[in-house]
Image (cartoon, rainbow, N blue to C red; front, top):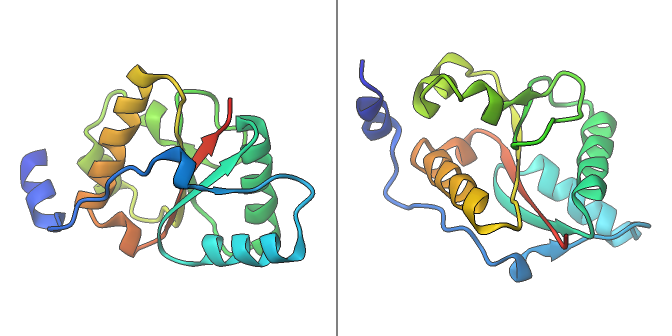
Length: 153
């Protein structure tokens, strides 16, 4: 089956539009009780969620902290051109260098949480935005929480 058919088969009418990073909810350590409850809701609710941290490293620490604390995700994945840094997480960007996106998700149905690292530079940002559109067309946000991580760097 061609990848084009998979997109049509799983496609939805509403495409996710990348949000302006200024609209993403900003989280900075130390986290307040209200921040922790809001983050818990983000990590447990299916759909696209945009968060912003002072740096990519702090964002990764935040994601790692919640994934390790919640104990409810067994196959997390990340879309980043950098190394993932979380033991057991699949680096989708790296895996898809030789695979089509639609086929990758068809072959990996057990991914239950995903975060996408939004770069600040324009050229890699376009690749990430295209990936987010693919996620929307495959309706992945109906299966899992997808956190788009923006950083101030």
